Amino acid sequence: MAAKAYLTPYGVGLGHASRLIMIAQQLGRLGVNLRFSSSGEAAHYISMHGYDCLTIPPVELAWSVNGGFSVKDSIARIPSFFANFCRQLNIEVRSLVEYRPNIVVSDTRLSPVLSGKLVGIPSIVILNQLKLLLSPRLRELRVARLYEKINGEILGTMWSLADKIIVPDLPPPFTLAEDTTCDTSTVTKKLKYVGFTVPRIPVEDGSIGSVEKNLGFQRSKPLVFVHISGPSDTRMGLVRTIMDACKDLGPEIQYVISEGNPKGDTRPRKLSGSGWYYEWCPVKDEIFAMSNVLVLRGGHAALSQAIQFGKPVLTIPIENHGEQLGNSHKIAKIGAAIELDPQRLNAIEVKNAIHQLINDSQYQRKAEMLMKLAEKLDGVENIMKIVRPYLK
Image (cartoon, rainbow, N blue to C red; front, top):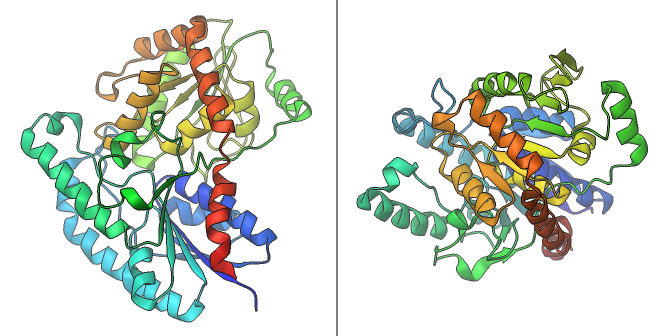
């Protein structure tokens, strides 16, 4: 009888789902039967890749109309969070009892870990956020910092119910997610840093040349790729600001903007100057490889991929999003990125930051230094080494 794996990514954004799809592809080559569970855009994205995905009630944070994390609305949602979490537990327990997998592989979801514990199925959790960070404004308060510490210990105790805790990041001192993974004593002994788990897709010159020809780009001119991801409510305000900035970059700078909508049109639309716009970009990897500068949120998966391509980054994290702010601050501190404050963002600031990244070679050197470190760790293969013994 073939081994079975149950894969459960968090439903907000696509980074969690894309990580587990890579694991699924490796498991599929071993003849392992697969089943997913997730919510929101991630569930649709998983189905797009041809996998069965059980849709579950979402447990999501609230976002303000200007694209930031809303503390007030998230607190108001706590009753629905709890109710949906209980529904998730009920669904996952029934699914695990019926499916009887050898292993549960969760990406940033607690309910599958608890469900596996309840029915006696081992679990592995992939996680770059062991604790929740408050907004910078709240963190100025001593009581808020104490809350974060207690919160980290409680969540750490819950995550430690998993058999293994895998951090898809570089080891210290270059860990992007150090703010959300370090100083959590309850899980320290179970943590394993495996390296990034974003696709290492070999991009051939032929495919790059085809994209260049179709979009009319010249290799002699700088190219900026704006790839926006995250919850749908947070994307469009930023996209509009960046579009205004790109109009004034000058004729020598080429650019591509992708709004990161997995249900969107895959055909490019011409913009002013040497620019193009995608609702969903089907040639993302080719444009990543071609680009001189990337404009990204502060999501862990997006910044990881930028490092693997050795590209300097303009990072604009989601407002009040503690994890993204921490990731963005760390890569900027290393010197491979410029971080902009989402609360004070304007088109002129974006334009000036892009010019600085293009014209100052120190950002490129730091990005290449991180790329060489990342090349020494194959995150997907290291995760497979941990998963394989459970499949016998």
